[in-house]
Image (cartoon, rainbow, N blue to C red; front, side, top):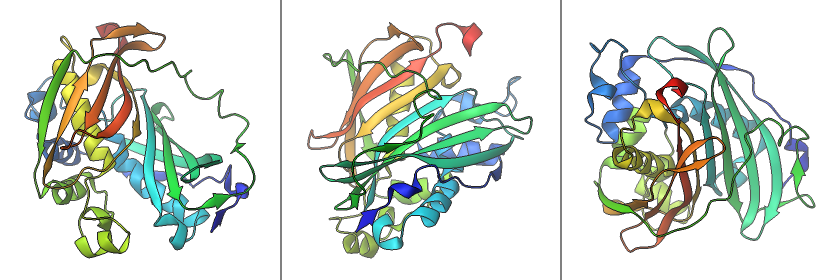
Length: 296
């Protein structure tokens, strides 16, 4: 099986999403959030979206792009490998958003073909809301020649900065209930049967159903926010990570991170996630916070 370099530059038509309080609250509830900022609709500023909520409205666009560029036999081999989300602002109840996606990179890696897709979401006035670079690794799949990238890939994204490793300043354990994948699926409106159907998971070569990578990442982001001094969801400007392993259900994860450190696009808090056996599940993680309330 091979992925053609000709898919680089393929784009979906804009997909419209209507964001309401019910969806925002359901997503936060699936993650076990209890803060009033996610649920109290009487607050003067209204409720706040969880910073990783954009994955919810990006999912149907991802399916459309995948169907247009890859066959079913290749698509089933894909795993979420990298995630880089920039929040221009958080979505809010009443938003009418438009999301488009395009393939910006196809390149060979030792386990298989790496495909990077970019999701760009704007509001009804055309103002940017979120931009995500979503990397997928298709295990055991070849691609044409070397790396193929769209010419404007570098210029349209913030500069990446070194993700230095250091000893953790804090650590917390998060329990993963046996039903979390089912709850997350329905609340996020992200349905992939390897996360909820044991027979499908086995047919895909997995030992059991596994938690969505975005659910693991969202739980980690929540932990980072709780440990950041005076931080809130509204302060999050960027989230980056690499997925390194699976999280089974039921189990637990350990999120460990550092103190905020100044870098070009804000104050970054680096983190990683370990599975119940201490193996890396998420590495090279960073949550970038606005330097001041004026930036939120």
